[in-house]
Image 1 (cartoon, one colour):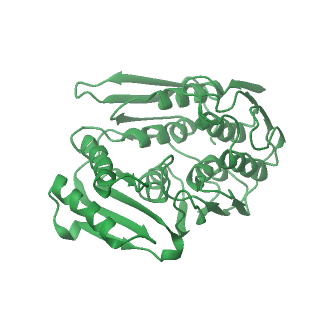
Image 2 (cartoon, rainbow, N blue to C red):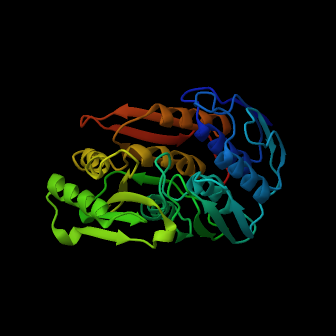
Image 3 (cartoon, helix red, strand yellow):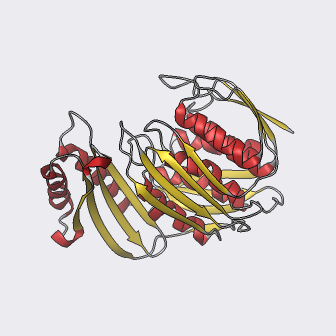
Length: 347
């Protein structure tokens, strides 16, 4: 069966392509997509999107047409998923984490274990940073039955890139439904400021702002100096650990943006989550849809339901007999439920 998609639908970004590639591999359904990233300033495949296509093709033995930078149309016909050792390079500060998330679900059901090493960006403003995957996303996959290990070998900040992440995936671990009804008691909370090739006072000012806004003690404010050769770059992360879920909120250092503003961006996201009754923040909401769909069901409470998440849900439902329902909660949050319309194969 051929699935045909229009990449301009909904929010019209790269997530349409990545979700479609994952589902094509997992279901064995061929894919044809046109108008890739039509709603972006520079439409078509950029380096990180092309790397996701190449990685998906490598692990599934796919036949691909249109796999070049700038291409707006792509045909992808997967074969059998093959585990093994893989190495991919984006060649820019494009996101390693988004590429890894594209192939991770497929490798869970490969014929053997896999180790993937990917170089590129690890901490940039347009994608989840490494620590989000390590602390928030992968632990939830493990609750669903997966076994995944991540290792940050080298930081790669925007715009230089040059980072490296390794991922080990144990095969034969199909995902099981997960219902995140509440996050439980908070067991830890801390802020970190990572900096490389920049003055330490930038990170110190960021942590001072977190302390001012959240009234946290000094032992929860952690200065993380990195080898200057891995810079220049800076990111402030706020990690909130609860019994059932961990969330990570990030502010990225940019030229012309004060340290205080960078920290404030992370604090605002963290505060929105802390004052809500949600189990998943804005970005985790988007990330949970695909694994829950492959598991055949799941539910959680989201802080909000974005156009990005809505588009992701639409793509998922074109591949799988899954009903994605959202309902406003009295708290102002959104209850998200994924239910199988009929029996789904164990992916």
